[in-house]
Structure formats: C-alpha cells, structure tokens
Image (cartoon, rainbow, N blue to C red; front, side, top):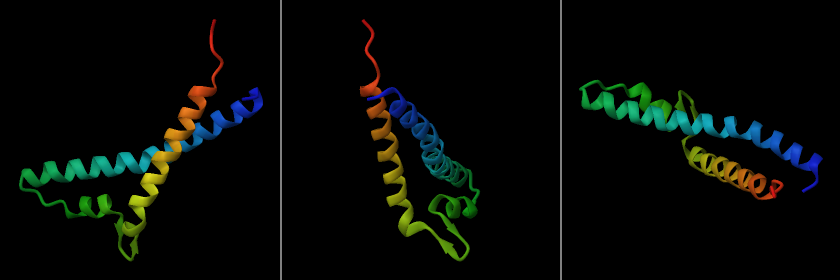
Length: 90
C-alpha cells in the first residue's frame, strides 16, 4: 500500500475505533451493572433501557444489534488491513 494511502487508512481507523468501541463498551457496562445491581436487590430499570437503546420515544433496539455487528466488522477488517500492509523489518 502506498505511504499516503496507508496514512489515510490509519487516520480513518483511528476515527472509527472510538466510534465503534463506545457503544460496545456502553452495552457491556450497562448489562453487567444491571445484573450486579439486580443480584443486590436493586432494580435499576433505567440501566436496562440504556442497555437495549430505548430512549423514550426513540427506540433503536431493532437496529442496534445490526449496527454493533457492522461497527465490529469494520474495525476488525480495517485493523487487519493495516496489520498486513505494514512494512516488514529485515
């Protein structure tokens, strides 16, 4: 891969990773925290709403799993393409 193209690909990957990681981390954290609180007898239903992406009238639940899957694949594929296109040391 030419150097300028590789530089642009790296910048794009650095932009995509936080955008993809934030919803993944929020989903994992809210689900885990909800389970822990439920075991303690605290019903933090609002955490379940965050976990399933139901924000009042805005319901992202039907699309959220698809978006998370696409985000995950894009980050993995862009990372692998950068990994395999890096210059090899002698």
